Length: 203
Image (cartoon, rainbow, N blue to C red; front, side, top):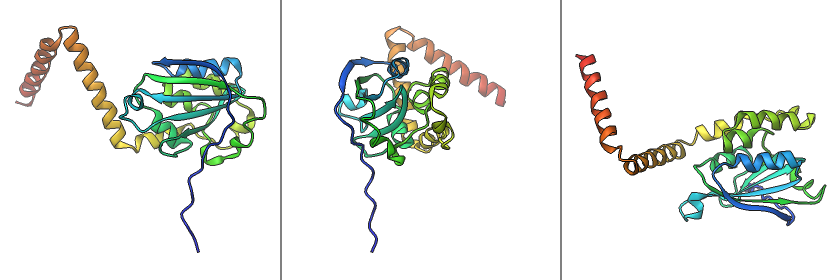
């Protein structure tokens, strides 16, 4: 008799709070963890979740500053899928915690939650330089384990609904900025001019 496998859960010890703030760029938190060679974890709550509209509340763990696991506590997704769900427009409320050396060893054995060393920097911060620096700091066994930074990209690109939501939010924010700066007419004129040029080209 077979049953549906339960999704893996991330169980980590309570750590010592190092930093708590709202940030527009998660890369600053990832870079801080890397520079401190932190063993611990960060909790990430995107703006849309803070506004009770989202479904992402994430945890990223670190070993000597290098991300190891990613987990969405709302959806129970882990690994690249969790990163894809957390890759939404900021800002984020971020808390950074330190734990004792070895305290995360058991949690880090959960293969289903693992992410490639540079994946968090690429997916959450869109920072290739930070991703490269993180991979350089990662132990050889992490690089040789077949971790693929492209997994999170693939998972994200497969989520058409999330991509469209991000595009729609970007369009809405651009329109709000245009209205604030008094550019509505200019944008409308530019759109009509572009349409006219296309019509002339087609004819």
